[in-house]
Length: 109
Image (cartoon, rainbow, N blue to C red; front, side, top):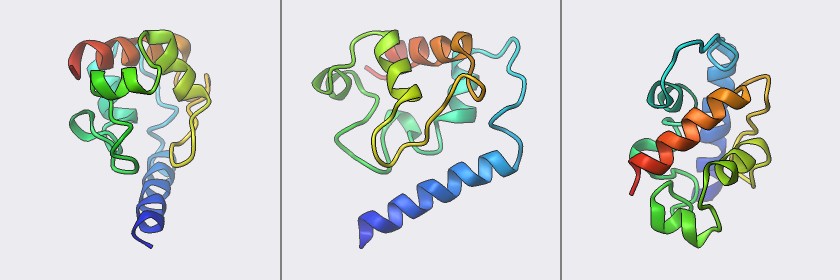
């Protein structure tokens, strides 16, 4: 029951972002940190994970889940597992996705 509540909260948050028009906003000139805060921080505060505590953005968890480089993280953004919103190229262009991935890899050690 608790897990379903978390899924519902996460889904609500994603819908709220989309409804507010934040998901597709122009990100020209934004840093990886700014893009992370806009698109990811709600579900991944301080590199954590509010849905699945074993899938944080910290290096040990990333590596345990086979994520070692930017392209691995971008792959998860584009084709995530259960509980995570899909961030397609229209929502987060490749250039911005790379900035986010590089920020995550250098920040959450």
